Amino acid sequence: MAKTEIFRISLNDPQAEATFRRFTQAICGETGHGRHAVLSYGADGPRCLLQNSGRCLDADTPWRMTRDVLFPVLSFDDGVEWVALFPMDDWQMRMDAALESSFTDAQGRSWSRLLADQLLAELPTVTHLMVSR
Image (cartoon, rainbow, N blue to C red; front, side, top):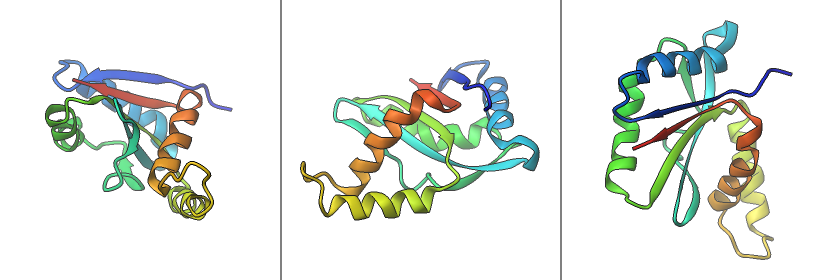
């Protein structure tokens, strides 16, 4: 089993490009690309950034492209404390399972909240990038 690594950067970190490069190399491996999920955390708990999750991230993706996506989330929603990116090869299956579970969830949570809660619980066990303001 590969060692779990945690990479941390802020939006305007001068070392962000180098840190982001190390992160993409860690999750993309020999193939040069890998699917990832994006999770934000704030006062309302965890949320999946669904429009960005399940996509491929290439090892040579520049930080500025990811920064441009995360900037509005961290800049305009004061409740968001951080955003995490991490590898997720089985995104569609995870969404389907969360949807099925939402029909019988005792707390009445939506499928996206169930998935976000699950991903938050798994975060310490996977290599990920934490992005803050």
